[in-house]
Length: 252
Image (cartoon, helix red, strand yellow):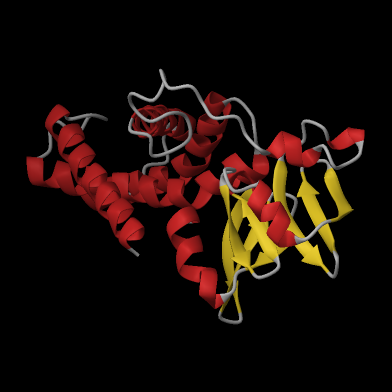
């Protein structure tokens, strides 16, 4: 919950701050309006863009274009959210002129896309620099990264899994099902032994019979009041109540 509040206030500050900056600069030919109207317009626009990015970003990064160039991923997100943002701009202009602005729709959309790309790109760069997403945190570049235990763990699997991305491991009787980006494989091993071996890997236990790698998570959902993790392979991993708080803090 503390992590959610942190990102909520960070997002709110970003929306309000960018709204003030764009209002002061009179971007998008709004310099002829009173400042308060500009601020309402740009704050509403930024809020629409922020909500759109929060909804579409994980889907684009984890489902539609996983592992692709970040510039392509960001452009895709900007292209999607530019449509609702353009609608907000249209509603605002209609409230001022009394008619819906239908002239030069392609040009208006391209201008909206350009602004969206600048805002999203700048936010992405800032988040990477602050260590909020991916990459290294400031000052960590000089530290030698600890070797991942995942490659050694995957040595137990057939040769085609060498170098695969580990999504999760789940217990099935005396066997362990290993979920990767190259498929699944059963090995004779206890979950407790696997978790001990993967102790330094970036992942966590979500259920008495499941361990999930953070990089394997595509989405977190709820069904019939129960939380579950959707892996990038589409497989659903259960989250028991005893691990729910830890999962929420680590993944959400």
